[in-house]
Image (cartoon, rainbow, N blue to C red; front, top):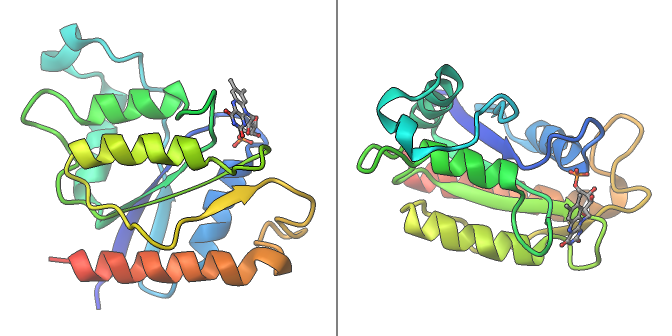
Length: 183
Ligand SMILES: Cc1cc2nc3c(=O)[nH]c(=O)nc-3n(C[C@H](O)[C@H](O)[C@H](O)COP(=O)(O)O)c2cc1C
């Protein structure tokens, strides 16, 4: 089997982001043959429709990475009960110009960690709305809402023992989802 390239959107630019740590830990739970790469979202300009005909280099890079990918993973915090602007900005860029979206048909998974008890549930639901419009087939179950607590990550950056089985089950379901949609 050839390598499946998965690009990962992390909705936080924070240096010590829990979601970035989660994204890195997820990549270690993926089986052989799957390669997870974190996308750079911090150098994207703010989306401006005036620039559609002349997209900036970071936007062109983002779109090329998405188009070349076999699957997408969104690892997002919840900001004010929705997705962070950083993530929405990236999605808006990659969806344009009209008719030239990078997204259609790319199988996706959504996961996130927040300090709040609902563990990004509302942000994920908003994101699912956006992805449905973009024609991105998104894994429905299992859902994964993680709360940032001591022990979620171990000293090596892996998922801690209490949550590892749960997160591994999510990764396994996501991998099966990507394989199911592979061309
Ligand atoms: C602007 C802002 C809005 C936030 N809103 C929420 C929220 O709606 N729900 C929640 O559970 N946590 C919220 N938080 C707290 C985040 O869960 C917390 O900052 C988390 O660490 C962000 O993820 P990160 O560690 O990947 O940066 C908010 C944080 C910020 C900065």
